Image 1 (tube, chains in turn green, blue):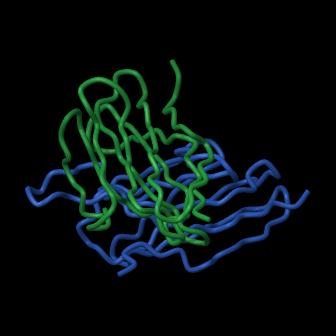
Image 2 (cartoon, chains in turn red, orange):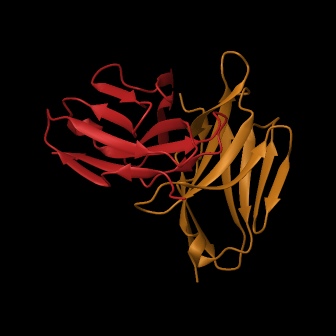
Amino acid sequence: NAGVMQNPRHLVRRRGQEARLRCSPMKGHSHVYWYRQLPEEGLKFMVYLQKENIIDESGMPKERFSAEFPKEGPSILRIQQVVRGDSAAYFCASSVQGTGGYTFGSGTRLTVV
Amino acid sequence: DQQVKQNSPSLSVQEGRISILNCDYTNSMFDYFLWYKKYPAEGPTFLISISSIKDKNEDGRFTVFLNKSAKHLSLHIVPSQPGDSAVYFCAARGLNAGGTSYGKLTFGQGTILTVHP
């Protein structure tokens, strides 16, 4: 039973490009959470999704960021027109129920040059 | 607004001694608290948790204490081992608008623990 799979592990984008980060939750998990960790900081909540629904996106920047968790396939965090300040580690977590008990993936490290 | 704070950026301990990591929070609606351990280039891994209705939870070498009146929790590791060297994050779970627990976690900034042989 594979854990939470995130890909790519490392992503380099030039300013203005788009970044797509993928997260496949653990088998049987229908709740997905995205967190961002900026250098020297803790993890900050971004968005909480269930299949085909966004439950809480209170941590998402209002512009350029979007997330989805389709009926089939992985959850996608999309960042349009990336800027240097988007450089961070992005972690996905999944759970069976929406009450915690997370399993985290290994993260995607986004570098914007 | 930092609702969960870990005021010690780092802690250095000798192998075999006790490590005490501290965490303070401000939101009295948090109902569940967790500690995660993180190695470089990996995701956080769950370590131990405690419900707000308890004041202590123990799992092997790890014990978490909760003082609700002080809005303070601590993680004790005894005896400490070099393999415990990592970043430790305190996290808290809150209630949604309907008063039901749900999975959004608020994390502290982390404490880097170094255990020397």
